[in-house]
Structures are given as structure tokens and as C-alpha cells.
Length: 168
Image 1 (cartoon, rainbow, N blue to C red):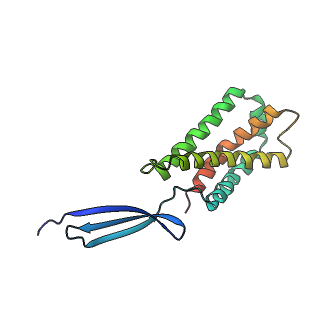
Image 2 (image 1 turned 90 degrees about the vertical axis):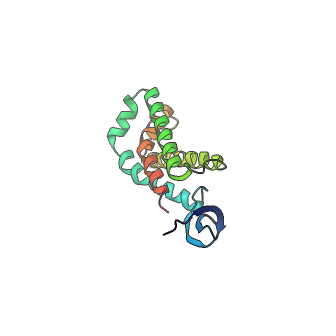
Image 3 (image 1 turned 180 degrees about the vertical axis):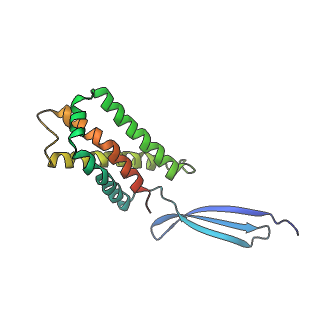
């Protein structure tokens, strides 16, 4: 049996308003042996934003509604809370990179930064809103405590938001 040389061609195309990755495998004569289409999820779309908000809410409620979190924010040093916020961003950035941009960061760097910032920013907003509604963010009275509570609760909430954003 003769071995047949094949070539793989990857094309990014917009189909139905969404970017798609089209992989085509052809033999040495140009005959298509296989073709596959998969979503090329590098753009932040309204659907992604909704998934981030719902994902953040999933863990913001059980964590933010516990007295342990409120006490931890009062007792933990500000630098430790800031480190927790940095760790959140690092985890989000790593997960987003490896799940969306690992092989296509070039040309989509702004989209990457936008997705990471949106995930953490929306998580902070969801947590801040929920904690304000249940009157556990003392805005105007103790803003540092309010921010600490938001950052601590946003740690797990942002992880859930990041995971839910991968659902397509």
C-alpha cells in the first residue's frame, strides 16, 4: 500500500455572525479527505457576558451570604485581600488563556484582555450588588471593609464565572 501525503489547512471564517475555525485535510491530489468546523470563541459577545454574570451569581450567593466571609473581611489584612484579588486575576487569566487563546493569542490580544477584565469586573459588580442589597457592604461608613468583602466573595464567584463562560 502506498503512503499518501496529506495537508491540513485551517481557515477562520465568519459564518452566521460568529467566527468559525474550518480545518480541511486534503490528499496530494487536492481531494478533500476530511473537513471540520468548530467555534472560534475569541470574541466577547453578549451571550458570554450573560454567562459570566450567571456564573458569578452561582457562587456569590452562598459565599457572600455567610457570616464567616463578613468576619474574614474584617479580620484579614488589606494586603492579604489585595493578594487574593491578584490571585483571582491570575487564575482567570490562566484559565481563559488555555481555554480560548492558547493557539491564537496573536491578533486577539485585546480580546483576551477584554475577556479577563470583563470576567473579573462583572464578578465584582455582581458580588457588590448582592452584598449591598443584603446590607453587608457598608458603603460610605467603612468603604475599605465593603471593598474587602467584595474582593473576598468575588474570588470563588469569579472562578464560577470563568467556568460558565466556557459553556458554548
